[in-house]
Image 1 (cartoon, rainbow, N blue to C red):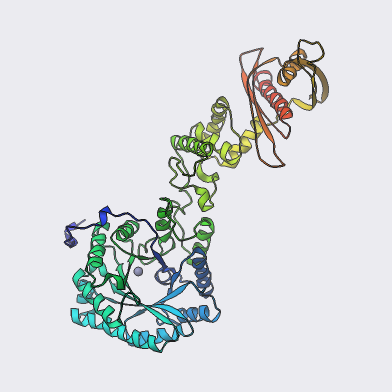
Image 2: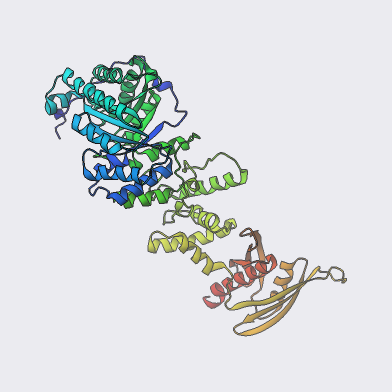
Length: 561
Ligand SMILES: [Zn+2]
């Protein structure tokens, strides 16, 4: 690889730069360029129906400025704009933007397409970069500036005849490859020609048409421009970053620190080559810092679905916020930390989200907790109990977590990843309401504290054992005790000792159920087992948990032993 083939980028001299000390405290004005920059970069550009669907998505997401195309460049772009106007699809608070080169016949055709609108942003551009002046246009600086000024004059003339209001946007295209003082000179000439002032601002768009250097250099260029405009108040400074070096988001954020007011971007960063900057990442980066992003992105899966359908592009699985895997933790230690963080968040009832490894709450994007943790052979007990707890509502006793994660471990060693559904069905089959060989038919607990007995409770239990119903009776100081003693007194059952008991409500509302966890030790050998009972009645759930534990002991010691 011959790196001598490439030369170093010329940085600008801005020793007293102020942007590194700034903070982003509000969302910029967003302008979507999905239907223009994004669309022109698609292998199969959107058809009219797809454009309408994309436009409606953008409106629903809250974009107030949408570049809808380059209507003078092709019939479909022209027709699409006409359809938006004639079918009244543009809400009052949304301004459409159209792009055109600063050339007479294209500008005229653009105004034909705008007929009937009450406002529009007309975006003219010409390339000002050193390289393009030299190899593409073979024109002097003055000649290039003249193209911009002539274009502006024509837009101004046509605007005066136009029924609605026109906002001018001018882009010195390939700004990042243009000398800043020359770019400023052209922009000032455009604004003077337009007659720009505080009440008639011009959008000066400073595109990183090709990302050419580290984001700090772009920030320096933006700050230099902002400081050197003759009247900063007559300019809306817009940026239009691409992602050639993979730093589009960083470049944009630093440009905002440097004074930019407005950002042109696309959903998921679709666009020419490596794409435009991704507006979703930018907006949710703000959101995650407690700043209103001014976009409604909570239906992330739906946004992704429409985007993928219209563009035929795929959102990569690790794409920030929207990717399929971004709320998934594979490592056991990460899962354990997430599990503990989620618990603390719930218990403290805090308004502030602070969970390790999850910069934002997936629920804010209407994404499920379910895919957060996937269990594989590297996962510890944290992941397994997280799934059972967060997804299914079972808060397992500590020892049961350890026991059950070994069961899952074995499956994952054989089958690789284990899904949440599989974890639950396995837990269900292994522990909950187990009915062989002992099946609980009914039980009744009597309060006998007044009857001069040494015990407070009497239990009558009917259990089916291999098809035969056994009625047993036991006494104890609590219901659990009484039931256990009933089993222990009978020769038909394994004798056990109670080691652990806990219970909790499973779901709220009228269909509420309780889960009970019982740990029994066999008195015949040292083996122990957990059983889980689930029932609307907490006592019944407890008895079922006991029967489940006995069945598990039976299975491991009697049947297999
Ligand atoms: Zn672009």
